[in-house]
Length: 394
Image 1: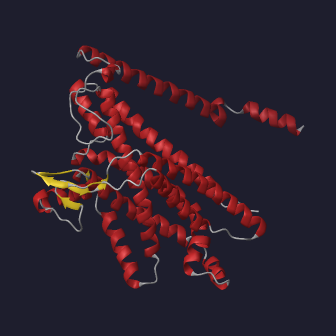
Image 2: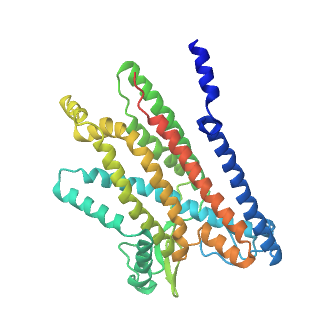
Image 3: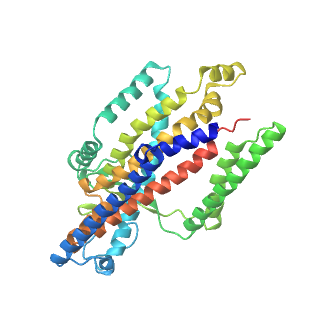
């Protein structure tokens, strides 16, 4: 009887008063509205392009670029195609983002820990840094560092030289590097092999300690392997000692490695700005760990450094990693401001290609795809690391 009443009540409900049916109608309507707007925009764009005789498609990528790029990790000339020019910009963006993320995490972690220091001076210095760099827009910081190199530093003839082989001037930072030699390739391979071996040894040492309770000197072993493998490769390769030292010739330095003012200004601005936010993320993560954990660790005789590394940071990581991922993505996206100070990142190179070819839609689409790839790959890696570092409860 009750079942029959329930069926009668459901049949008596009007169509528009049924939330399931009404929501379905709204979804269908929203889908058709989105499709109509998309069709209108695309058709209107194609009509305007055809009326202005502007070609569409990515065929321009195979045309000669006809412009130089100031900095390139690979060989490039104006006779190369637009595709290679964009690849140069992609590599430049990836370089500044990769180095920037590493330096930001290191500096931000240090500042976050210093922010909680019981030393009054260290605590206030860290707090002052965070307040200062968080409150100044990143673009203004880029302009400041750009002006610092070009307006405040001396010319190459009067370059600052803290020690032999290192020069700082308005042409950037120039320092000596080893002369090119085949053995350095093998040393790089040796470093990669050492890292892989350290990874497996670390996992083995953890399992061994869980089973037997006996610790393994993983830090000492890692240092020996990381330094020893490339050192042995260097010995076997003939121990090359030749250096490429910068020497002033004319109006600039020849030899060595030069870091341009544009790259240095961009890297400094992004790292110093983002590290201030990372510091607050680290501070919040550490403070999320209850004081009882610290007191218990101190009670069993652990030193402050051991308490931080073994007790606090492993638990704080589950709070730190999600917002840290956002800051890493912010640094990568903020690197697009490089165009403001003349660094040839992907946005800058793509903008030049758009100005020369008129392929604005394709150029903007490529920029969106590149930064989407950067963001998704960073998020995927950090999500994997977050799951790996998650605390497994018994």
